[in-house]
Length: 134
Image (cartoon, rainbow, N blue to C red; front, side):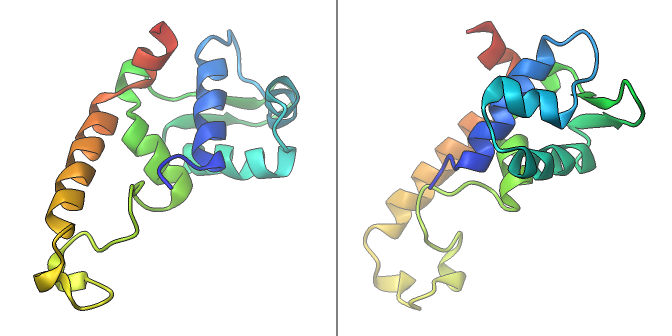
């Protein structure tokens, strides 16, 4: 599936953090967004490890954006929290890697490959700024 719960929660967290005046901790984010804290904490750590968020320690610690909203692509966010690029279909990205080894006779693979390319391009161009402004 293209947008999983992890991707959804990551995007919702980034939207909230984009308007925050100071870092927010995972407990506050969890409460405000009604997201399970343990699941959200893993998502936030992944985003911090990738350089999308900055993590602050201490009494006023938490998470804040480490990039501008214009520099955070949805493809980067989704790839980060999913551990791989989001896929519309469960098929190989190249004919050589086809799990059924029948790519040479698959009539739908070329269409799905083009569709995935267009979606990847759209998600790369779509930034957090685009979402926050809408």
